[in-house]
Length: 378
Image (cartoon, rainbow, N blue to C red; front, side, top):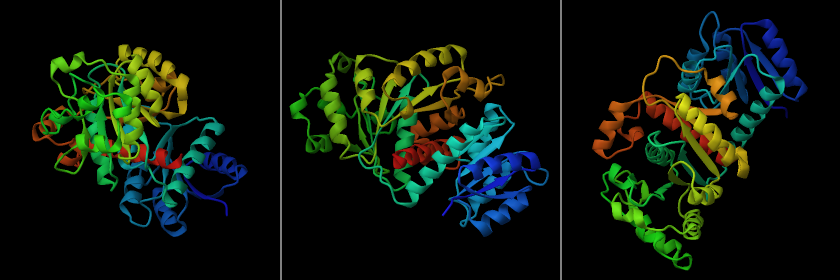
């Protein structure tokens, strides 16, 4: 049976063009021209996917999206926002409302068809109960201070809230901060493991070094003791640890710090998904372009680009310009929240647990859901 797609747009020409393209690709198409019609058809027809315009006369697309997500009948239907609004703030608003993807007009029909296929494949994998067992997720900053540690522990907490059983870990002797940030003190389980030979790495040995946060989140961290930074890390030992963690963490999430070096070059190839963090500053974006080109040599498709806004900036490049410069799709945008970050750190908790209804928590939860969907679809 053909998958059913609901197109919502007040422009008749857009409805016809998108509908014709989708029909040629074998999909069943239904249409709505207002937000009210969209809500009714989504509830009655239960489409497999909704393509939703933002600017409509009776109700904007953000409100429609929020109402769909608030209805138990429609909350699991994937949504692609398809609009002429191009600023990063517009994309943030779309994801915060609950969209799974965001495309701007005009878009080449081949790109729209590709996005539709990808979303439907992820949705199908979720319905069939795909598992994230054995998966590895790396979090790498283009430069220091963009939030690799913060994103790592919040991803772990978000996945734990999704009833998974993740482990978060780092390979940063002398500057490891996962343990102290979560109120566990200077736990040194990873440091002990990195001092061993490859043959000494085992699942039992790793389990003995894992610390557990009060939330149940499992942590394998280096310490911040300066002399620990003198440890020479064997890439082979690091890879052996990652391979064993595939059988322990479901999934395992690694704080890889920032930049590129021989160790990152080796262990990044062990990551099923590689989250690369950038901020919108011109210097950072230029650095990101070089790093992404290097990382893409192994497997371009595993890269998950995330923009982290560390301060409220009025003048930002439009997100589509950032995507063009970096030649990668932006999968998430994280808003600045310095006060909440400070309060959560003082409490020894991830932000998604400390204040789950905050905007930044919603963004981090959405990032976790997106990464999980991609893992499931593989």
